[in-house]
Image (cartoon, rainbow, N blue to C red; front, side):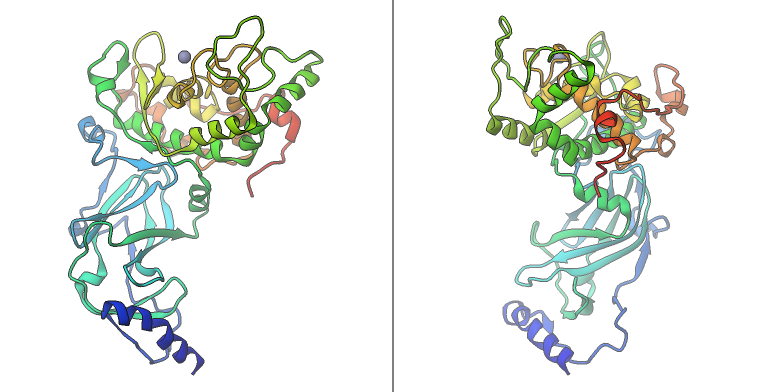
Length: 408
Ligand SMILES: [Zn+2]
């Protein structure tokens, strides 16, 4: 009886405001019932238009379409409304997800409603699905497992539904820890208009770039990185103490002013916090590929060599990319946030941390076999061997943390 009362009270707000539900006061005999089918996205009917994103032989023009291909690094599983009555589901990940539940929050009803239940979504998957409210009046369960009856809703204006995703898959737990909100897209101008300076990307390299951007963003979000970034002076002192030397170069982060006679424009704690936020904010980044003698970064651009995509990031060789990424954030060669001189700044610290996170197995993606980029010789300009990671025993984070520091 308690449960019946709760259901009735619980449904009043929606009925009063939307007139689109019926209070169903029949207790559920089967508490595990979800009222929607469990779907396996590996074997969907043709009507769902399932496809593989960034298939090796896909036309690169598709990945340069920034209205179609984009994702935020903290949401590799993307659910967006398509038309008035459907969703487009895309997974920007080299590894699939198991047990994914998609919830909808509709206007004037405060609880999230389970609308799709996937047993499995394969890597780099896309498909389209009609929102079940459109098909007819039916029962659903809320995020708390209560039954709700929703009358048919013929369609939705854009933004009227908020979608959210939950999964028991450990990979989803890692995605949810990512604090960076960078928007990743591929810009054709860097690839087709300035040949010699840049080279075209292709889907094989794009998959590596996406994998790297998610891992890189996880590393930037990691408590060990935040702690070291906020206390870089401590990192420098500890490094010097271990080497038995004085601190080499600047003692702490400094900005873009020219360094004269060892005088640096050191950042205040508040400025360091702002800088950290800038590394993680919602601006757009275009991972691109170097085609000439130098890598470039600045504005949305952050480029690196093909070898960095195929091998380097799996080995924690993030020196070049982190340098270009720092240009993208706004730092020049007079700041140790970009520059590698003076005993190492951001480039050195971030690469060391990244390698330590590989050693701890504390990144979303650790196994280069998920992409096997080095085997796809038809799409590469050089020959590469499979990347095999080993930790340097002198790694600064290994020396300090000695196997601890994993992010729960
Ligand atoms: Zn530079």
